[in-house]
Length: 145
Image (cartoon, rainbow, N blue to C red; front, top):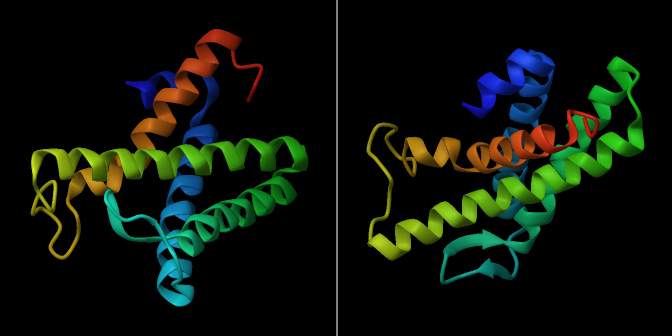
């Protein structure tokens, strides 16, 4: 519902940018976390997540937004600040989904995607981001974006 609202009122560019930021955060977190390793972020909720992955995810999202700002001649600082907040929300969404799985005692949210945490794992970060962005847009009339 949030994605439909955003697309109808602010264009598909915002939706695609948000998806790109969330995927860059997830992918960057995985790559940096596996490559660098190091101290764990929150073992009781998500035992494999590391601080390197946390910051690597944010870094990857910033690189994607930097490219978007250059390509579309957008305000670099506003975009990078917004991206940092979105990347943080994406990681919080991922951790929330992991916490819910721990509470109900399941490892994966489904078996639809083999070797993966489930379909919800692909959407957990994006759902929180879209909800927060939709609320911000509703209360500001889109001035923030």
